[in-house]
Image 1: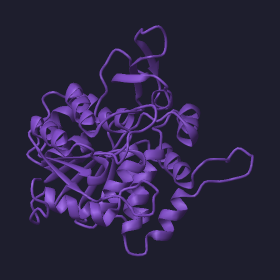
Image 2 (image 1 turned 30 degrees about the vertical axis):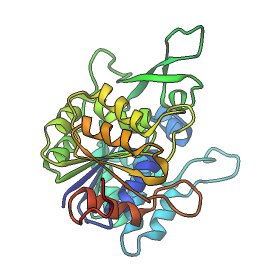
Image 3 (image 1 turned 180 degrees about the vertical axis):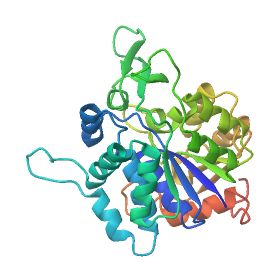
Length: 320
């Protein structure tokens, strides 16, 4: 099975960890709009793609390989102290070096995957760093405010209504998709969106025109994986089904085949099932959260639910 997962950060890490239990042919397509922390510093200082989410995806795939756990740990290691390296992750610096030496982020990511012994691929959704802009209400006198930057959008105390994506280096042209990412989506057997920061990690893939068109046209089974809980700032107060409504608002031509959600995170299953049907799909509810209380998806449980959503095993709960 050729699987493609789109997202960023910890959410994409969870999906990749689950998919590697099902297939070795996994491609991650990663957001490139981060402007905070180590990634933001490298982006501003060197003009490169922000490497943090790309690093997270590589680490997820490396951890799934035999003997890859140490490399995944090293890749994720952050320097302490109070000098120039403070806060930088080893993997971020390595990727920045590869991007500069090879002058091609896709070639740099492929080389990093080779060094880590990874059989899958990690690709940027665009070869150029992008910027998120959000329409937000609740900040001043009921007016709609516009805020820019992933960190600002993710941490806003207002209500995010809609996001758009821009190339700050070429503001008059739409974002350009990574050709390899578009090809991967079109050739995939299964494509996954989410979980993750909804407005800053999941929806941006739908705002790159060629990538959006590929997601609409692909014959792959399309699966949306919902978050366990709403996120402060971005989706505070959102119900599970509202996540799907927002998805449809940003990509009304997109149809999905399945929606996966944690059973304990869905207060009204009937509403989620209706929202899934409106997108052309079917809701699959299961216990997919870790039992340690950290609020993360359990890779084994998520892999089992993915098997069900793809029709590889029969549904275990009547009414799915």
